Length: 583
Image: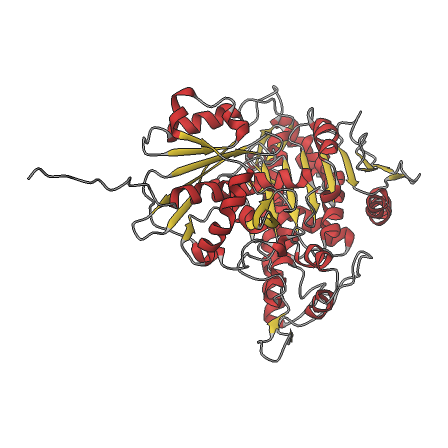
């Protein structure tokens, strides 16, 4: 309880306001249990009856957090303006996770004599980010305040951005996202953001939710999960009188209000027998899909407005869980629609080679704060190029082995309307959990335009999309054998079955069309990701896109090869006729 709420006048008038068990002034449905100030005390409001209204705890807490968020944002802007105007940087003690490098925003590093100097500043805005649904506010600013007060560390702009995104809440105080995936290169400060998020949730969310909170943090290795405990637990003990259990493998923290924090390795038993409102998964690239689906997600089913917060660098083709969430994020970006997932990724754009120093700030938002260009330049000389791409550029391995040259795909975006007709190629994912369709059509100038026709989650949804497309009687279909099994008989004559033989036959021609700028696209993000990550392997004196060698799903790229090749091949006009005239 604040000092203002201990004031005698407030306590007396609170009893008057709550006489007769009134309903909440704000929602009008719940019984009032608190007296809320119309004008906040720190804005000049008093404790007189005219400035008090009956309120339920939920509405009072939501309004308080909205007000706190607005104040924090104002203070943050004012502090930033003061720093810019005076050139003053507030130095705080450093957490042991990383060493802060103090440097001027104008400091630069020359990579080569023939290149301009590059500013040592990362990109605070992610290259890929889903929309945030309409919301009343965000708890992100409170996490930043908590970090400054208890961790003695001001969060960087990128950390504030992702925390604001995943902690946005609606008018009812519930989070608008249930899941979050944040991806950057290594050593950019993910662990500090995690510590602030866990610490704030443990010590503040119980007052928002009116009940103790359970938090679970996990990582692919127990020692990494425990490292966060070793840093944060003593702070919770010092400032919040928390009780610590430091037995390795059973580490936990208990707050006086009953809120608890458990630290576990991401094995098949994690989350079982537990109900957690916040689950934080670090380095989820190495967390199995069975762990997420069978352990973590079920542990949140009974919680009000829970959050699964995942953080990681790029992974490998074995990172099935992270790939699935990332694909969902790309899909929402293409649809321009918000969902229950907040996804943000810092990685180089496709039009820049990862070995070009201009690409490095896109993957390293902490560049200029905790990282410098000399460090990344030294890492680029590592003979293990795959490690450099993952750790320093946040690229999925084998991305540097793309079947097309870096940068060419973004130059081929087609913005005008495309005509009807063409060929729609359809394929399912390896696990038959998603269905992809790509349509290709040829323009009068001989250019072939490809566009994503649909991405469906079930076979029935795919058939509904097909039936809508089939209303255009000029459209033909190229389908994989797994889809042909239940293909509608009414469309039998409009389909051709394609597979690996056609990939092997068509891939060289489609690659040549891309390099010759005869194949263009309509700019979908997921299509670009599938095409850019696709890896071609040599087979039978030709090349073919390989799902096994590519660092993630490439179904849209395979569909592109089928549909573009079939749509662009010359049509048969028949043999010339010989006409004999009677003399």
